Amino acid sequence: MLSVLSYGRIVARAVLGGLSQTDGRDYSLITASCGFGKDFRKGILKKGMCYGDDACFIARHKSADVLGVADGVGGWRDYGVDPSQFSATLMRTCERLVKEGRFTPSSPVGILTSGYYELLQNKVPLLGSSTACIVVLDRQSHRIHTCNLGDSGFLVVRGGEVVHRSDEQQHYFNTPFQLSIAPPGAEGVVLSDSPEAADSSSFDVQLGDIILTASDGLFDNMPDYMILQELKKLKVQKIVAINVKLLGQQTARSIAEQAHQLAYDPNYMSPFAQFACDNGLNVRGGKPDDITVLLSIVAEYTD
Image (cartoon, rainbow, N blue to C red; front, side):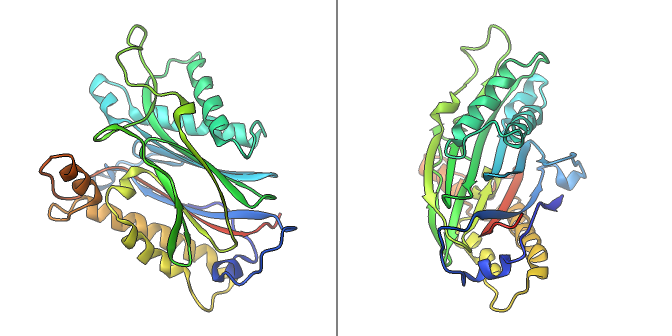
């Protein structure tokens, strides 16, 4: 359910933002993950970095740290297809490409494109659709390069404010851009977007910046102000490095748990319900969904 992939010895000072910017230092991401499948209440769990139909990965390479989140499209279940297989296979493939060094830090869309085309050429039949978001931190340039296809996404938080974020891509209400593999003969019927259609961006980060990458299960149930309230827990005045791992775990889990609880509140006016109302639908309550949260802190790189 919960894992922390790495943490640096000086991340405590990075959280406090007390380190001056120096071009000669390499940066890294200290990342914690947490999530809940929609069937969590039924006791249905899946192995690996998968929460329901969501999947994610956290990979480290000598030149960059790379994160990915994908949300399998649940509608495939009506046709006897497990939606989690597509998202999980896509993320595993992207992770392998990163670990093999087959990527350019400034082009996360290249990772997504290569991963998707490997799926298309896979000898083992695979059907399904998924949104996808990839975030790459270039260690030397101190820039994150991102691509987002659909309604997963990320926030960059600095000084308690959102300073950069992804743009959601929707064809129409509740129909996000998505990568797909359709059955033979149905290619023109199944909605499918090109990975090159992903929204791409680059942004200079600073030590202590927080990057929150998540599936729509988070953003549909928690507005920015609630997320920022939880992230304030990372702004501790006196913190030692040995506690950073636990602090990251606790904050990631707290955010995921709150989103999961709100998703089942019938009286809560969630961001999803507000969006539905804006589209002429009379909707109230949270949106039960799979939830994946990757919480990263920008820190100085330590090998």
